[in-house]
Image (cartoon, rainbow, N blue to C red; front, top):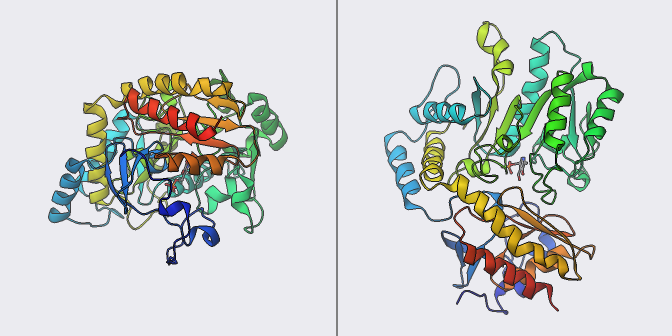
Length: 424
Ligand code: PLP
């Protein structure tokens, strides 16, 4: 049976309370209705009661190669037996970390890149990128360039800086003001950035942070000319262009870092999620040659920043094995087919009276925007009851982001689940 029973436990109360505080969850309602996932294979997941689901969200935008690949487990196990971990702080290194850095630099669209690795994922990558952007200008004798411009609706993780520059205001509830010396501009207008540069003053701006396709904010592909326009503005005003590719990388947009779809060269790229497809946690930041230059050419510029588990050999081994799968199976090209399949299958939903718009066409990700305010969580739960896992990424938008191994037939299944769950 590919469909969950309508009376599966997540739809009704569970008697057992949980001790686990879930991220981004209303625990007063989630506490007694956890859905416990126990097994995964390619695009399929099973819960504790044996119900099967189609993972149309790649767990949380990250299972690019699909679930349950034993070759990754085997590679990690071999590494763990050889050397489970030793620090890469100071002058220590391990082979998997060195190999991964070498490979990422080779794949990078920024010639002469160097990489910092983060153990947890994207939040640490963003905080690292922004700290380094400010530090770069300090080293360049322009310490007043500290301001960071990001975009409305953007999500840049849950650490201090990422929370502070994020464009989803609710994520700062109870936290206080946005980070000092930061501001947000409209997400789809080059003129908005131009106006902000004029207002703040280019000589005070360290960086502009931008997702190629905005993900968690509701899947917003950039309008034609937007990425080229903001990249040119950054170049003209000597502002570092930080590309947050945490979702868009490792095939999601049909390229290694997403940004290659446009003819621009960023200065900094953050990545996480798909770099390991989630087999183990890892993220990082690629710095272009320009940003590396002051730190690599002259002694005395040690950066006092880093995370204990950065460059963990088991996680780096998982990344190397994952990247090998993406390469060997041609998943970058496959993503472009999925991009077309998602558009073909989901766009017709725009004829449904409950649907305001379907956003797709830039990578293997899409969103169905509803007319009804607050309608997305309900639709997500009805989809789950129909056996398809998707995510409400705003009160009105349901996002789709499948593994890059999904077949056309399985994309059809997503479309049918939407049609069924939207109702007559
Ligand atoms: N940046 C972007 C664009 C993201 O989508 C996310 C997570 O969804 C992050 C940063 C934070 O990454 P993580 O949750 O791995 O810390």
